[in-house]
Image: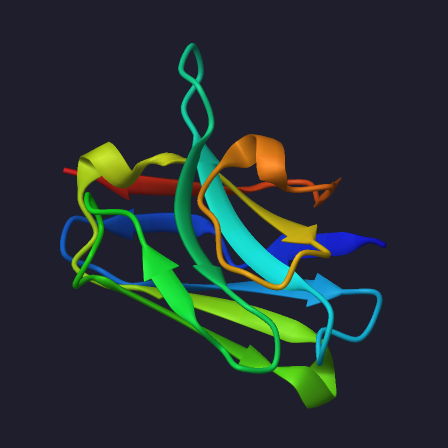
Length: 123
């Protein structure tokens, strides 16, 4: 399983970005996809996840109300729309996949990881 995250960049406070995660296998039925972020010197933390075909979603409290996660199974892609971005949202964002069909924001519960995409929010 390979995952490729993209869509990061530099944005001003209050701006928006949409991250994409392309998965090399079908996301239709068997994979929960999660988004995580990491700042240098800090632990990686869960941001959002979307479960299998049912599409149950979860969001980190710190970003709830500013995120929307969605999936396009025909394109094997999961999106993370981020609005009202703040400087403290600056981090490398990663997508990951797990074969268990339930949403989780725990890093250790994901089996497959892609390279991250840098998000920088300027003040």
